[in-house]
Image (cartoon, rainbow over all chains, first blue to last red; front, side, top):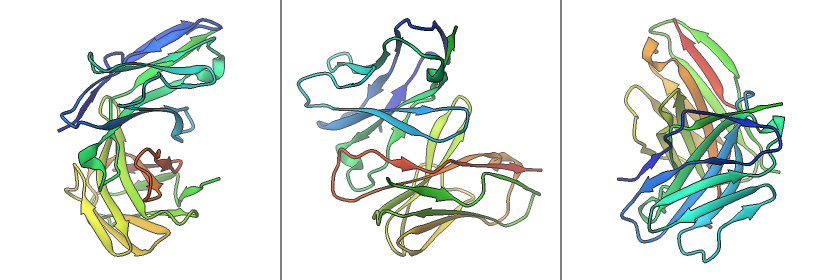
Amino acid sequence: AQKITQTQPGMFVQEKEAVTLDCTYDTSDPSYGLFWYKQPSSGEMIFLIYQGSYDQQNATEGRYSLNFQKARKSANLVISASQLGDSAMYFCAMRGTLDTGRRALTFGSGTRLQVQP
Amino acid sequence: DVKVTQSSRYLVKRTGEKVFLECVQDMDHENMFWYRQDPGLGLRLIYFSYDVKMKEKGDIPEGYSVSREKKERFSLILESASTNQTSMYLCASIEGRHNTGELFFGEGSRLTVL
């Protein structure tokens, strides 16, 4: 079974500062993908970034980067230069080889980020 | 852009009522999903479908059923709603070909069962 752990229920960050949201995972799959989603208070889930387990470089998308440490089974999301609009719930998720048929994602419990002016 | 539309943003139902949550996607995606989201638990998979009339149980299917009569539409059914089914329900879809693809989500349906 796969498991995603997000140990920070809530975090605060000052506007314009960087913040790291933690995510660790547990899987026996040889190949897997890691995802981060943002959920604003309006409720929609917004895809942010993807990292494949065999990707040589850490993924980046604008102000978002994924600090992938395979040996430690961690996939932390780094948001640079935080903005007020970054205040939201953030979910880490994964899809393993065994999920290929299902194509579903397994999600963590989420981290609520609040950006303060 | 992919659009996943859930028919109701907010519903209030009574215990024992039959509840239908509808989801429609406009990108001809093969796979569709229903998740429920609860504080501290994240999103948990209820059911998914990989083709018309095909469905499989997810991790928490008890108390739910689904229907997929057309490719674009995936319905979640609560045969007899109970208070422990008060939750946010999220529908998602994905095309079938690429394993790296992300799920596309609807805006969610917040159900309260009294």
